[in-house]
Length: 388
Image (cartoon, rainbow, N blue to C red; front, side, top):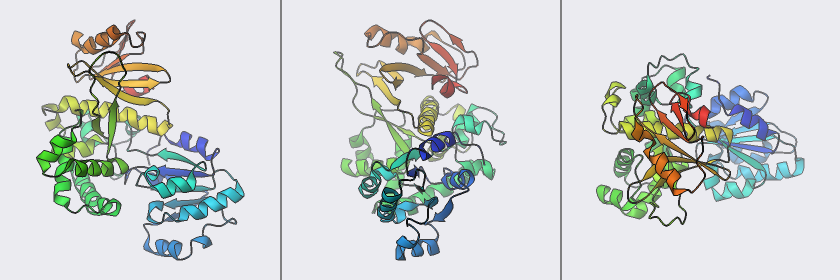
């Protein structure tokens, strides 16, 4: 198992709350993580049919005041267990007694949120980030190989072909997980929706346009989008807006947590095809923003991510909000620095929304790194660590 950055966060919050709720996409490594780092806990997986029956028939036999340090994996399958856990932790008041885990965002379930309010710390284990992948033994020769391979642990642990892996992952996700969360009546159209969404990464999301292309309603598109968000396939980057006398875009942009899955959905067959793909700029942007997003989740950071875009075309790819600071970041697919890389930063500074900051950054695919009075030039390999 590759070392996971989230462990220090998990150890911290295990001491502060009686319940630790660990969510994340299917196959992001939650089970391996929990078994590896919490060996003194008794582990139950509700995907196991016998375990599922035992818990549903007599939950009190497992959740009681006599027994502590329990992990319940895939807890969303029996959400009523949370009521039993609530009663026990309220009586015991022992920190770190229970760890619950699931592939559906627990915060989206009103029953779970209500049961554990004030009693649980919520952590999200995303697919591997670049700093974790760097410790693997899988030879990834360049940026394109890293983007194409993605970050699901099984690919690295079992040295799987990414295309074969994502074909099975997509099939399982659509046939099984989607049906468990919401009864999607037309899986063929849902598959089409996911692939068309992949072709619109890093663009302002327009539900009506996508609905017209697929032949469904905008409401259906929004429902389907919520499924992908709940299962950590995609995340929305909201636009930053403030009354500055400008016409600002208010539509969010959509990004995939994992670029390997993104490449599969775009029908890319190997890493070489990425180099000349018409969306390579957007794919690289997705790669960088997703890595930052995932590391923020690993750290349970209070920082927020936005983008800035005026309707006349001026934009900043990423705004990192840290407290009252807004740190603008431009992401450029180019190995040689060009003066227009900083055009967006200069325009941002001209608006005088915030004072010009030397923390502003340009992330690119070249090797030279430098610091000026108004921005940092960062190589993609160290970009996340440098920003956070």
